[in-house]
Amino acid sequence: MSLNNPLANVLSFIQNYERLGKKDLITKNNSKLIRKILEIMQIEGYLGSFEEIKDSKGDLLKINLLGNINKTNVIRPSFQIKLNEFEKFEKRYLPAKDFGILIISTSKGLMTHNEAKEKHLGGKLLSFCY
Image (cartoon, rainbow, N blue to C red; front, side, top):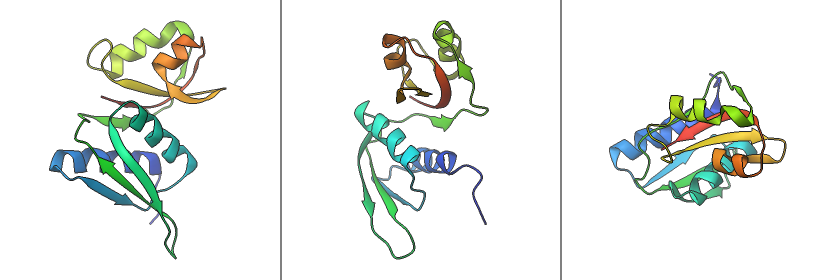
C-alpha cells in the first residue's frame, strides 16, 4: 500500500505520539522535505533532535519528542500566499496571534511565516504547528 502524502503521515504520527506521551518516534518516511520541516520545527522548539538510521530496506528517521506540540498538520490544498495575505491564513490555521508557525515554501527555501514576512517573500503553504 502506498501513501498519498508522506509528510501528512509523519506529522500525524508526531501528533499522536505526543498525545500518548511518548519520548521518541521511528518512521520509515524520510525525504529532504520532511527533514527540512522537522529541522524548522526543531529550531522553533517544538521537536528535539532527529537522526537518520541506516537500514537495509531504506533509511529510517528517529525523532525525539519534547511534548511541546498541541497540533500539527499539513495544509491541503497548498495555497499560494502573497505578502499581504499572511494575517488571513494565520487567523485560519493558528489559534492566536504570535502563537505557532506556518511553514512556507518560498523561492529562497522553506521557512516560517515570520521569516517570510521579514524577507518580504510569498510562497506556498505547506504545514502549521502550535
